[in-house]
Length: 481
Picture 1 (cartoon, rainbow, N blue to C red):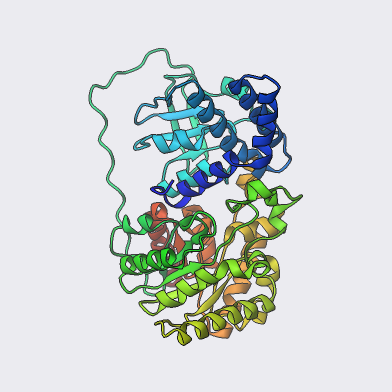
Picture 2 (spheres, rainbow, N blue to C red; picture 1 turned 90 degrees about the vertical axis):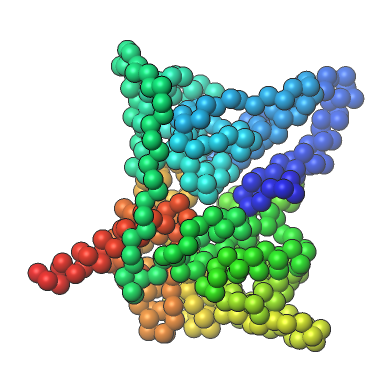
């Protein structure tokens, strides 16, 4: 697990928590004492847990079932002395009811993709696929058909398919009677070139690991608009030095450009490593509970090492701090107070540091509707994933409603436009860093709403640059007419 990073490490940490769960181990131990064979004791206990997750009303919990299935199978294979991994040919579309994180991580997806009957937009494998730019569709069958029988509704092995993840479609050639054999592979298309950006448009990148930034070609991008530290560090590390080293590496790769680092955003759809054990991800509605800044202020000692590392790294470059899930101005004041306390402590210890700009995520209507109340913030960043979720009352992890969860919905666009105008009136920068920022089908509407700074996943950067260039050309054409 030490060699893993980002989302992969987060998954392994969650699985480690499952394996060391005291309640689970006690139940298995009781079965062993009753004379049940080890493999049967483990299987029956885990399958009961999996079934409870599969039947949950919350799509987020249903998505967690894949993690338990992976742990179940890995222990059973170890008990049987097996080291089995599904062999997935390179360049194919993997079609199944679901896929475990281990299977995903073991495969080279170059030229291929994934189509699942189950899964969901916020399942762990979905996060891995998005991070690595692997085309993937989920929820291809109705929710009540997402069990083992879902495979019956998916193409059989060898069936020609065309997967268009951008459009959310898969075309299946069921009527094909013969196949054309090609002895040499088709040439792989070259990555699209980055389009020149208008002078008043900024395009930044979102990263979850240091490696994400190291792999981005130079040119075009103007800084890091979002560092998700809950993936950069799987859980809540207490080691200030580890965090400082990671932040310095990000600054080195950014080469003088700004790096906006979001404080730990655990809770809801991103549980911390202890949440599986202590039940924090099983509240009635975790997306409305102890998330982001609420959790930080409830457990302030947990954020101190991160704040100290950020202050020390800021002495070396353009670090900026982003506070998640803010709904009340008092939360900004509370974080500012924590930052000031740590700055005084570093000064007393004679350690180099700098107090960086402090911004807030605008991802709930309460903040978007009254942005002028947050004048204490130095900058703003619109998170369209949550803003759309809370505005439209559609869970961001519900696969069957994903087509309706869009930032270009008129209601969401109205809030975004209000934010852009409010930030301009205060003379403060505002950026948009949700998934919609990299969606070429939504960029035009966001541009028309006044957004001029976008932060996107590295895999979406080229397409976003072309969409933004087209917006400027269209605007110029309108002026000429």
